[in-house]
Image 1 (cartoon, rainbow, N blue to C red):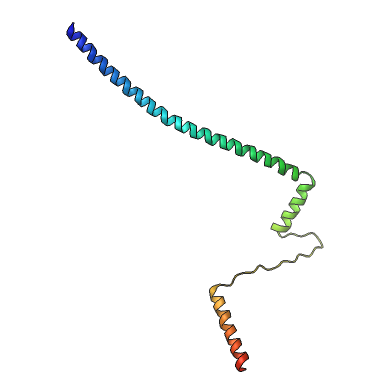
Image 2 (cartoon, rainbow, N blue to C red):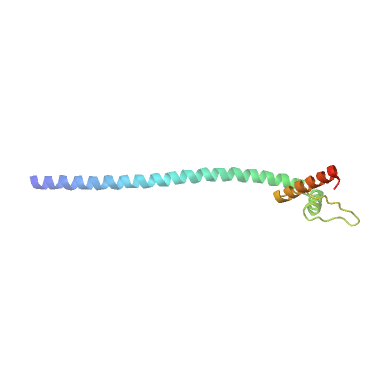
Length: 123
């Protein structure tokens, strides 16, 4: 009977250790899942706020471009982006200032020096 009790205690300790290890493993795995879930919930809340803001913006834009607002917006877009004009209109396009490259600047400086030389000495 003493051997049976000793054997029972040994088996109980082994089972306890196995159960404790399994419990620890489950807690460790659950912690990772919990952290991932919390991150996803934060991301979901952020996206819900963004959807709310975009819906409000959509309502504002819808009110601006309903009816006559849409046609004036399309006309402005056609004029500015597509360079279109109404029949009988004249469009004036101003050239953009383009910064000269360093070689062009050097050529201009050399030309200015030659012109100055010619002005001073008349050659």
